[in-house]
Length: 154
Image (tube, rainbow, N blue to C red; front, side):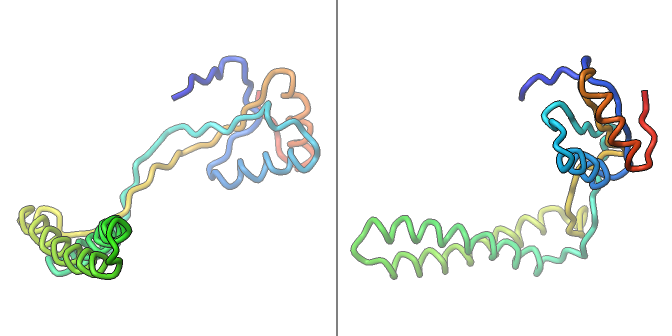
């Protein structure tokens, strides 16, 4: 991970949504502003887990089968390309991948014994997005912000 020095940057404006900060920086770019002197910094990070549905053993087996399918395709292609018989290893890879994926998916869900009977997706979001600019570019960025009818922050 690279070290980013924020100490020489000044706050131009803060937004609640990333899209608004992105739109402002895009408007700066449209005006010919040197956007390499601008940073968007998210703060107040939250991990949000969105529950998408109930997870049963059958659904866990289906998800495992889908994962196994792709793994089987990969192995089947690998072995199929290494032998003169392409379709045989590919077909075996797919069938075995689906079977083993389904079995391991079902066993993995059953091993949890009902402690996590839901499927979800996770994402990290920020509570606030600050648009920062170098001291030399802050004046121009603030002027552009004022032209958009917003007040810069110092």
